[in-house]
Image (cartoon, rainbow over the protein chains, first blue to last red):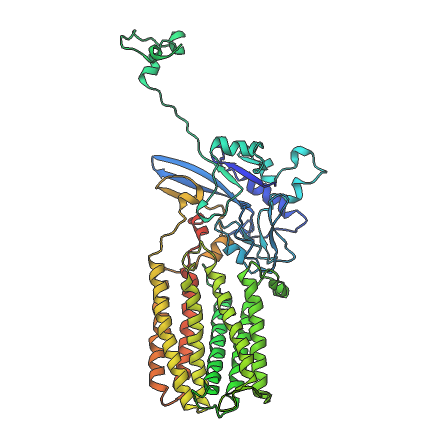
Length: 243
Length: 326
């Protein structure tokens, strides 16, 4: 079984919102019709988006870290929004796991959005149907596009490669390896929704060096004579090594 | 959550209609089992069924205002295997059909004896139609309440108390309305019977609603900003939510009122739904004073509107964690 998903690397996201604008651009010009945009250049601009970049400040000044956090539909493996839909307009595709809304069947009751803990669904105020990220389903299978471009618009737009796209059920896919090796995690695991999209955490940018590592005989800094240490009488780590 | 008036009117109107129908059925059952005297006014059941049906239709019309595409509402019956909303969309017309049939039998004089023990008990056809209606009524109660109770991360709603409260609020309101009707027809014994049940049901729902208010005041939310963005730190502050002029997420899930406003609505409904109707019922059921009983129903109904507003406003959706600041 295939489960397509996005991996979002919070370590490299710079919060430029290129994914937001490219998403809106692609999806508002697609076959499903426009995405509402009211007062785009005036006071109180509002509209329908599949993807938003939020910003959080972690910690207290001066020990703070700014985290840019793109949020879109997580294409859950147990999507709580799908079974509650009274018309069957919300569904999860068997073949690739994408959660979609059939805009022709949606009655606009908003119940699916109540049943999504992530706030990933937004009603279109003009078309009166529920909208959400489609993983650019009208793009990723389009064989008229070069193969490298058969990816969601947000992934192609990201300048720092913070967004990866692939099959998270295939253990050998690059996204699965990335989740395993770089500690990819789901959002709000407490509700058992099993989100397919994963986030990669901030990674450490400092290393710990102990005193005895600095005085080791084979310390390259010593060999390059950039650092000089008096010979130590006490046994060093090298004395205990086997080779 | 942002309370939608369409849903507030839907749930309160059909609740009263369901309670009224149950009251009519109980009266007829007790009469035919000779526990209560026979209803001498032939239009009591018929007019009651008409009022119940009108309330159901009113609720149905209100519900259409909640939909973006009401012309596609017929599709809502499709997913009854998984969706409580879909089940409600089936149970509501089913109950309307049952109440319609019940009313037609009584108003048209089509009733006949369906079962008799040959001595003193004669059960009529309409009573058996009524049994079907009772089943549909309880199915509708459960469907309506489960729409809210089944969303496990709306922790204020996700409790059996939600279902119990919906059933008892509807029955209390409907039995009070039935008391008005029976006093209008001058049925003294039946007014006492229905009025006593209205009092019992109102006290019962006072207990269960108080229990749910107590539960909700002590609720511990499972989702935090830490679990929402997956970063472990005690101090996380949102700087931007990705929209400057608000979005569906800010309009649908925040009631936008102050905590003191919320609290005052709670006190208003606690007064209007429970003590005032109880006092009016106590004072008027023996004299069968239609005016006082009607006041009891109307005051309780207004209180129920406030109660339902509070029910929605009090629910904290976990998505709100993502929308704390512009």
